[in-house]
Length: 420
Image (cartoon, rainbow, N blue to C red; front, side, top):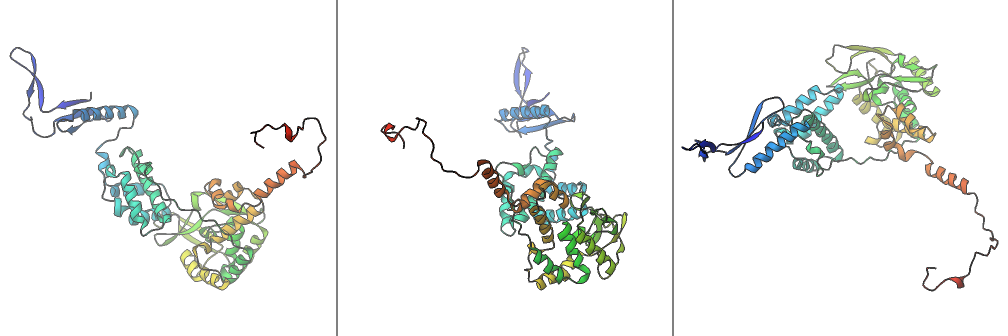
């Protein structure tokens, strides 16, 4: 049973057998009170308090017993592990694809470990969150801070789940998470899409058709295989992408680990057929997800480089895409990357009246709410439809002389002081 022990005094008996307080050999030495309790694992634990703090010791015991009943007890020794040690363990055990793991590892080492690495988990407080964010804001944009904060929040949430700390300091009311302002997407015009396509070498022109006509991400475009094209059924299956992990190319699942299929327009199917006649598909074998994996996957790729290998994103961007932008007179900016073709696709579908749910499914988004946040300003005519609906119900404006019914009254009926 939990109790508080006084290490300076004990109960003894005098010559008459009466209970009296007797000084112990520890009297006046060290911390006076020791709170003793049994933790949920059955291990006896204790915590000491100085003289004149018996009430604090009793409150501690009460809190421990309450936490045990609620199932929220936290071993005080467990949280003494450093943030660095726990974060590295968390990353090694987390379920994520290797490219995401590489990105998270970069955020951890560049933006979190320099500040939090040597601190014990239990020692990290909301004040540290605010200080870290302030320091980082000097050299980094809000987007970088927002992503790094999300990683920090995930690590400390796992520490709560593992019983190492009682609460996540990232979730404290006094901590304001850095949030990146969502920029409104300004979709390209069809003329710009055609101009950039024309600026690419012939070998890569059909990539624009797949991006603008099917909404695939860059890695998904490079990962299109012959078996993924269902021209007769009018579908393009998105089963894999080409991505770079630790400096090596691998095949992997599309983002969000979800395969999908998208409508294949006849114009895009024709473009792919012409492309494959001019540049026959090549069977390419790469590791699956992890460059060190023993699992090798072979895909007969539709798009390959001039050495008949899988296309590397950074090489394509620097050598081909940027040059096509210059030829088309388009600024070389982040918003004009190949991802702009995906925005063009989404805007075209929404303009045609396609539902957000369908657009989200075709784009491979995690949920329609995300699609709505990104593209809601592109949804056409909502306010016009509202106006037409009400106008249709109310009908045309007609000003007619109303026949008298004896209820009109007159200005003389109004009493002084009444609102007019």
